[in-house]
Image (cartoon, rainbow, N blue to C red; front, side, top):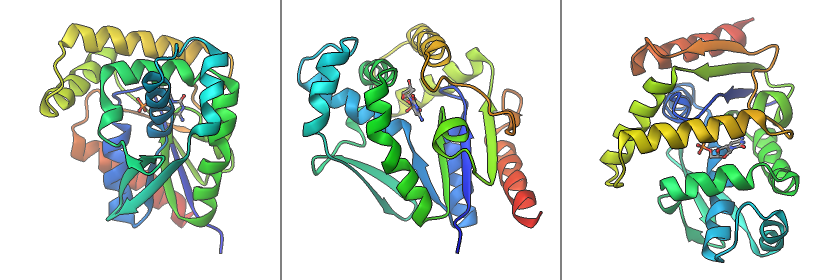
Length: 224
Ligand code: DC
């Protein structure tokens, strides 16, 4: 039987991961957070004291990286060479490393099959930047989830504070704008709405409304 794939793309802080995780739980799909893969490579590069802007240094780390995603109760944990790094990859520093390594074609190639294999074996809601455009161009449902800069930074700031990360709203907003600009302007797999994706702007929606909007889009597509 063919698996159902839902691609959710959009800028950071639009609520992709929270919305996708909850929608996946309701629908019984596996939620795949692909940003965690780029973050894990960013962490590996950081630990080597390498420069994430230096493609040769980043590429030299790839052969020693083994990334595994494990799922328990629809919760994704990411392992770097058998170490659970799910929490370590969430700092602003590693966000920047992730954004930098993600422009390198060899890094995207390294992660491509991993993402496609998961979608081949499971019903997935996969979130990222290029899922609807590059990774799963034939996804049954494509959603481009966005919100205003300020709303997105505010949400990310609250999330980081709750996790005890020491930062300021301005730092989060600036980091976010820098990453958005990089993600959208890179020549390979830029952040871009697929032509056939449904646009969902969550600026004026609360979490429950956003989740329901996404679930309704998926259910309608399943029934069509
Ligand atoms: O979604 P996130 O903030 O965890 O993603 C971290 C970085 O990884 C982000 O700057 C862009 C990059 N990324 C990507 O290029 N392609 C994806 N499918 C997911 C994330």
